[in-house]
Length: 395
Image: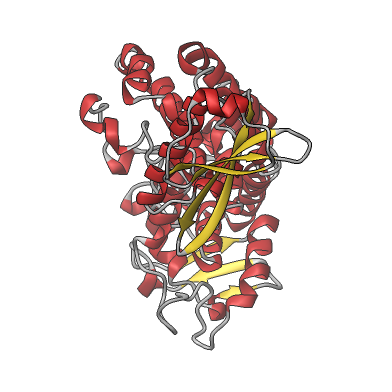
């Protein structure tokens, strides 16, 4: 088939189809209008792809478009589907879409405002107006490197939020990999590590963390067990092994037997309203084993020791706190914001108080005092009272 020429394309007026070779045709309609169509086989099916009308699209441009489509097909893709795909948003547009999508989940208005404000301050000036697929690792590093050592917590938040936006872009097919993810790990020096047993949230931020846990997609058993652990200031093993036979709902009391306590002594835990609400939800988990929080994977077995840590990790909290660290958070809160006695605070953590002689004569575990303290803690953690803090380190 002879190829068309620019002169012939311009001169032809007879209605019909005029081939240029390689599946490219000029269609002349009875009305005299002219348009380009490419006939091509996509996934075993013949497709006709419109390339635009003449003279807006000339012969040379039609050939370029046709060649590009043949490359797309040779790579196993569908040029028609790709044409229908919405245009790629800028990083700023993508960030605002992610922000809006998460607003119903974020109950803390301060956190929601801080999330987008961080990007407005650091990321938008650098590459906010770039299409997401044009943002490179170098662009991200140019934002992070100057603050990585001087403002480590801010830098961590900036990276986390850029990574979240780019993860959204990956999910929508706008980019192929996350330029703020593992791709830049080697270029950023490690931040100072904090020993696991010292990693605890400031008490002003525990309310927000608790909301994140409540709204997480972790298994119900893991999520509820972690909530119960926080609300009772218990050790992980005590909560994971909790039995319904230890719970007295009428007296709002959890009695942990000596065999399950670190100190080998029975521990009575007054249950707050918030903790009782968790137990109400946990009723649906019963599998006949008697466990309050049975493993969803191992019938009749308690949750593993890493399950609660995984909830923190999956929800972006593991670098801020350990499960055991919530006990420290409770202790700081009680000391700084309540008038509870030192003994009541320590006994709430199942710590021994006083010398051996004093312990021998102490006959009360201050259950009533501790009940008031735990009720106040449950209210503080679950009702948002901790959201008045001026600082917010949650990502």
